[in-house]
Structure formats: C-alpha cells, structure tokens
Length: 411
Ligand code: ADP
Ligand code: MG
Image (cartoon, rainbow, N blue to C red; front, side, top):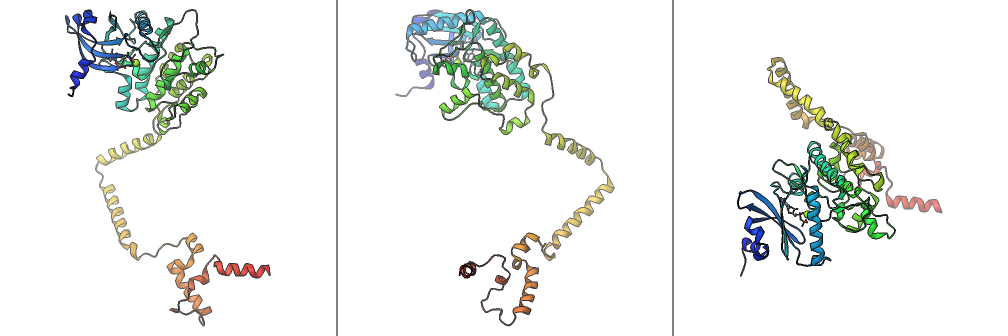
C-alpha cells in the first residue's frame, strides 16, 4: 500500500499522548524543514489563529553519537541559550516549550520567507546593497550573541531565516555554547564548509589552544563571500582538499563575478577570513568597517559607464529629426551597398605574409612567376607535362633533395 504525502507526514508526527499540551494549544501543519533529529512544522495557535513554527525534537531516539540523555541535555541547553538571547530583532523568538519523555516542542515565531540559503538559491547572487543589508543584520545579531558570552558555532545560510520583511532571524542554537571566563572550546562541531581553521586544528592537533567566538566571524566571512558570488570560498569536490584550503586560508577573488564588486566588501571578507583568530576582525570592528559606514556607489562596469551615456546621447539625438544628418546617413548607406556589389570585381588584397610563404598561391604573383619561369626555363618547364612549376619557387627544401644535399656534404 502506498502512502500519500499527507499520510507520510502524519506518520512522522510524534505520539499525541506524549505531548498533550502542545496539541491542545497548536494545530500542526506542513513541514518547513528538517534536521538530524528534528522536524520543523508550521502550526496554528488554536485560540488566536496566529501562525508559528514548531521544532519537534525526538529526544528519545539515538542521534549520531548522542544517547537519548545527551540529546535531552543538549536540547535543554539550546532552550536556555535561546531564552538568553531572544528579544533581539535579528534573533529568533522562542514562544513556547513543551517537554515530554520522547519529544520536546519548541514553538518559534514563523519566518515566512524561509532560509537565506533558499533565497540565495533563487536569486543566485545578491547585489552589494542587499549583501550590506543582510550582513549588517547578521553581524548585529552575532554582536548581541557574543555580548551575552555565547558562541553560535553553526552560522550558515540554512540557519539564517528571513521574516515577512526579509529581515534576518538567526536560528538553530543547537551547537551554541556559553563561554565562562573566556573559556576555550575544543570539540569539533559545525558544518564543514563554514568551519574555522582553529576548529579544524583542534581535531588534528592535541596541543591546540582551542577556539572561541572568532569562529562565528570566520563563518560570517564565508556567508558574505557566498552571498556576493553565489558560491562558497573554500568549496572543493574532495572534502579533504576543502579542509586543507580552509586551514591554509586559501581562497581567491578571481572568478569573473568579482570584477564588478567593489573593494570594501572584498576587504571585509579578507579581514574575516584571517587564519589566525587573534588577528581576525572582531564583530564590533566589522560593524564599523567602511562597507557598512560609507555609502559609496557600487563599482560600475567600465563598459556600461562608457556605453550608456553615449547610447543615451545617440537616442536623444535620434529623437530629434535632422534632415541634413539623415541625408548623410543615406549617402553612406548607398556607398556601402555599391562597395559590397563591386566586391567580386575587386582584386584580392595582397598580404605580405602569404606572398612570402607561398607566392605561387597568390593569383597575381602566379602570373608573374609563370611568365618568368617560361622565359628562364621555357626549354624544359612545359605546361601540361606533369611538372610542378610552383616547386621552383618553394621556400622550404624538398625532403629528398635536402637529404641528398646533406649526404653530399658529409662525403
Ligand atoms: P536543525 O537543528 O535540525 O538544523 P533548525 O532549527 O535549523 O533545526 O531548523 C531546521 C529548518 O527548519 C531550518 O533550516 C528552516 O528551514 C526551518 N525552520 C526552522 N525554524 C523556522 C521558523 N521559525 N520559520 C520557518 N522555518 C523554520
Ligand atoms: Mg539548522
């Protein structure tokens, strides 16, 4: 028996008895997104008809290396952090929490415009202006997170949502961590393409000094690069090569899309993607960067700058009737037509290069050569006897003659 899409979705819904509170208050609808052990659904608050997004986390099941108790602990930590950071315009608002043995329900404000990732996929690249708008909000959100001594650790376009007005909402604090007294972190978590070099070094080098908030700035650099040109800076089909590129900070602004992008955004990306975390720009410095503070006109394509004013001028001129100009154009057109018609009677142009390489191929020279040849060798070069007169004027020696000549020399 095959299941319909709706039945499949319903099958994934958790045991209703285990979460009476949630079901009494909300009506779950379609799936908005999925994670490793969570499903996010649109839901409607029954009393008010308002829409929300419910993240339903299966804490009863094993998830990767995590046992159910670890999952429960991690989710409780996520909730505590969400409660600490919410209230900021660019951070997701947690509305309600329901906890049962097997599931935890987190009810969030609904972001109708979905993930920044999907938006980027639909538009391919963002203009400098739009990138500035989005990145300023991301940095402001990160600034607030960091000022609360929290590091997000999984910033990426999939975890940045867009509300009805296309404003940013940073979400998914599943990997976020509270830093007490400038603690250092050592565990490897996040998403490969967005991992900072110091995070990777932790998993490879025992004496690694650990990492801290700077990893979020690195991720912001990767996001900004991706928004501007539609592809990430370190991506490589072989993951090992990608990780090595990250560790070495090896990326470039060489793809053609970068030619039209001004210096300020490139400079900010460069400052975010600095391998040594202590030399990397801080979130406050990033917000004070000229990319955000100076409103320069975006770099104009030189060609556009050159062509458009001329084109405008021409169009303006064309819109005014000028009898004298029209007559001149008509004469030019007639002259051009006559030239084209006469083309087949015109003598073919003589190119120095061709006449030096193979003079016999040029019709006019062939006549001269034939005339000379007849006069000089007339007694033995005869037309129609299979002899190649062109050979008399060849610039390169015939191979058999050349070998004969060399053989004579060596004697
Ligand atoms: P996970 O920790 O499993 O990655 P997320 O919190 O990132 O879970 O949510 C998974 C996906 O669900 C998001 O990438 C997004 O597509 C969707 N989603 C999450 N929260 C919301 C929301 N508030 N509004 C709209 N979609 C959401
Ligand atoms: Mg996520």
